Amino acid sequence: PAPTSASPSSLSAWLGVVLVVVLFSGGLFGYDQGVISGALPGIKSTFTLSPLIVEVVTSWVTLGALIGALAAGEIADRIGRIRTVLIAGALFTLGAAVQAFAPITEILVAGRLIIGLGVGVAAVAAPLYAAELSPAAWRLSS
Image (cartoon, rainbow, N blue to C red; front, side, top):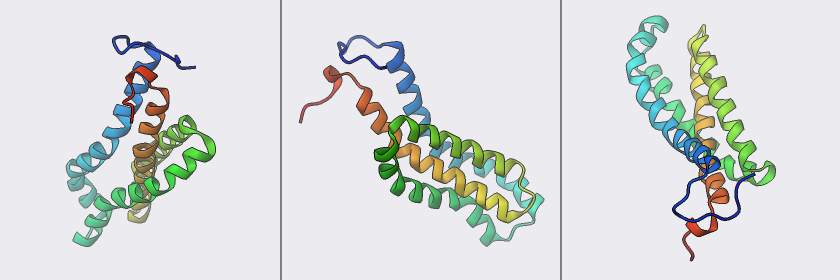
């Protein structure tokens, strides 16, 4: 359980954990889009990819993120923010495992899509979770 009130000058351990979750969730998309550039030479040689398939492998994280972000609000409303963040982490882990053990290009692309779903869900659910747990004294009044 998160604290219900806090002064803006104090940072509890729980809020520190929430901050780390939000930071990692926000960084997943940039990291995964960036890390593929270093992996592409090996992927191209392993799977003998055409330029079109290289573009598909690279861009399907973005497609998955779009789908995940569109679905995340509804998911978070139905099952809660923390469970949605956990689902995002599970999707990211599953997608990474699928990519690591992909025997064919189609499985590799599916892994990229799964990671994208996780990234999209995290991009929506993590800020919602952080907003719900932030102390009232830290929130801007509208």
